[in-house]
Length: 433
Image (cartoon, rainbow, N blue to C red):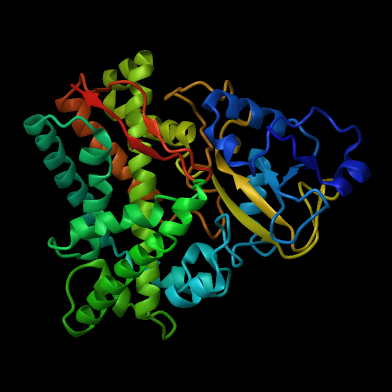
């Protein structure tokens, strides 16, 4: 394993004093993300002890624009970057690598890749569409879908929790909320999986050459379908989110067809993937920590909210997002390490959620943890997850239904994880009851 990271030279020499402990691994190396979870956790713990953010991804000759990045691994640093959007920009792209210009031109910009004022304008339009009536109907729908899924589990006894339960709940809820007809849903779910399957995952050259555009083709199909639906809803409004989005008028603006498609893709990929992974990790955590499971089942109503937040903290479904420095900035105050304008900074939410200065015994899974200021839905600021409330509701309702009707439900073996640097993805999880 290459030891390719060093604290920023200016910050370490000018401001930080001694170099501190050696950096044990390279976060830019795909091999790092294939290490066992305890090894990665130990590496992040070492990074949190460094006097300045470590830098990764540079070539041996020095910094290469757009390649190297500072790793923000402390809770306070991730919060600062999240809540200082005028300094830490999202517009150049939050994923690694950043989306190509032609892709953004063709498919439109996702809200996660926008800065104010455009981001604020789109977010106001979307927020206006989430009326109290729509939210109430969605909460009723979550209960209905969860009940149907547990009925099916009892009846069919499937083996994989991910495909039969964890992925189905958020997908069906989002489709119902958007007003997506039943007939194309299976095809849409396939497109969701294709669009996200390689995000943050290293692939052999042969695979990249064979299917370079599979994810983009899936994205195009999803966006075309919802754009068609948007045009239909403008002609014939219905009681669904698509209608609300294409008819909401905020400062004379409503979502265009391309903006609607980009939002739908974000909602499906982010909303389905993250909740799916959190639900799967949660079932496994409650299986391998029987004392926590006993606490939960002993007071389901009282403990469920804390359990959901601790699952999100411990699992952290989204591992990282990147930002670009708009100006020179000293992290943490006037005496902090210096980050230069144009530098890239990657916010590691999973590391922030294990910060020893914020969480007592951070590697422990403790559903009674209070307070629990986890960053599983982001570090605050304008890009705090729009779907945080929805995800919490889905998790609480499904776990209540599962543990009330099938109190012995548990995972069998560990989750089959995909070694992604972007999200804590579960391919499958065997379960029984």
